[in-house]
Image (tube, rainbow, N blue to C red; front, side):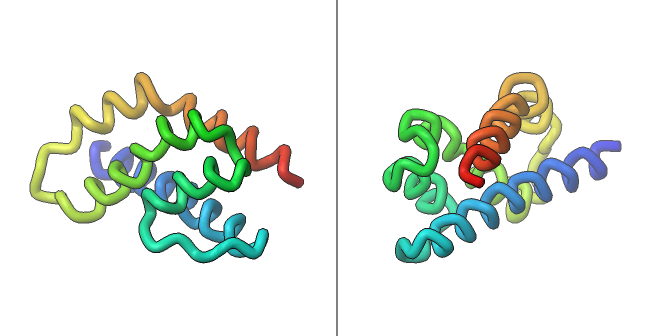
Length: 100
């Protein structure tokens, strides 16, 4: 079960970051150099509220943690994300849907 949740959360983070990159490129802005930069740029370019981008940048760190720190215990991080931060994904999706 842990591996399924871990992989699902990882895929969500990847999709968010891919969407961020694609929107930035589609709008003609320079491609971000890092995952964190992609989220910051969404706020900087007023694609999403800057304060939300500043708080949502943790999504890049979560992605990196799940991708690279596979020897560490992930359960506490996953539990925190699912209990406290999952709603941020809904907010992000709502903001992106309004762009269309």
